[in-house]
Structure formats: structure tokens, C-alpha cells
Image (cartoon, rainbow, N blue to C red; front, side, top):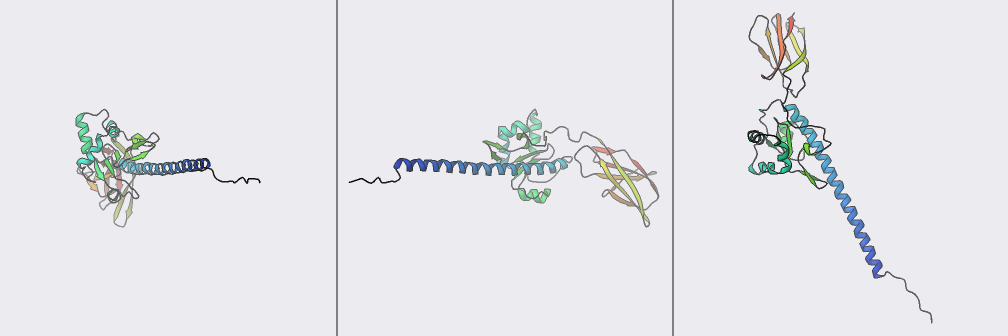
Length: 247
């Protein structure tokens, strides 16, 4: 009588199959985690670029009264070597104190309301004078935790502070046009190699000594004569006066 050979799954085959499935599952899981981590890191870099651009624009005004003063817990973030080695490099003790005291805390809602920056998901510490932007939570990627643009090799901004707005003069164009019984004087095309967007326009008649301040880059006069017009930013930056004859 012939014996029939029964085919079936052996224990070795079953164990091997399970091991292969676990290995493949682990690969897929790790690949998924890596993709999520990379996406968050890319999103973080875009946030940094958006915030840094805004901070660069506001850098000319170190008296910005926005955001909240830091709590003790938030100040402890500066104790990490990653951050302190960047913001305190080559600084004196007095400068270190000034830098830390200059930081303000912004959550994502305050970034939207105070700085008009929409779509930011994380909270940030910002020093406008030194142009430092720090992500409070940090973002983990490839085994490292990133807080600042200075940690990212391919980041487009060099945020190391170096004597903001060195240029002390600017240039501009000005024109006038009659509108009824008054003349409109308009300043445009201000040329300045720095981060200023809140210029003041000063003007006076030739025979006057006192300068008047315009509310914006366009103002109106009703008296005929020769007007001197200049553009300034506080006492830091000024232009040479330009002469505008009315009519």
C-alpha cells in the first residue's frame, strides 16, 4: 500500500514568513515616519523663511513693542548649547543679557494678529534687533533638533547680526501735480540698502526753518513757493533735501 505525501506549511516556513512580514512592516513603518519627519522639517523651514523676512523688514526699529516677555521656562531654552553657541558667540556678558532681554514670545495666533503672518503652526521667540528667530518647541529631523535658521546649511538667510542698517543716507524721487487749488507732492522709489519700511517725509518752504512731517509719502500744500523735501528714518538715516517748486 502506497503512502500519500501530504503537503502543508511547516513550522520553519511559517516562522520564516512571519519574520519577512515583520521586516517589511518595519521598513514601511520607518519609511512612513521618515516621510512625516521630513515633511514637518520642510514646513518648519518655510515658516522660518516667512518669519525671518518679516523680522528683517522690522529690524530697523529695535523699540518694537510686540509679543510677550519671556517666562523663566522660556528663558531656560537659551541654556541649550545649540542655541547659546549661536546667539552668544563672541558676545560680552552685557551683550548676552541685552540679547536675552530683547526676545519676545509669539504663539501662532499672535504671529497672525501682530505680524500678519498666516499659516504659522509653531510658537517662536523673536529678537527683532538682532534678527534672531527661535522655534520654541524645536523640530526633530534626522536625529537632530533644529531651533534656528543658523543650524540649517542650505538656509538662504544669514541672520548673524552685524551693525544693522550701516548705510546712513538714502535717495528718492519726488514729483508734484496740481489738483484744484492745492498741489500734491509725492515721494517714491526710495533707494536704501537696508530693512526700513516706515519712512518719514519732512518738508519746509525755502524761507522757513522748521520742518513739517507728512503723514505718509503723499502730502498736499496750498501755498506756492519752493519746498525742500527729504526722507528720514528717525535720527539714523536721512536723505539730501530735494527742491520742489510750486507751481
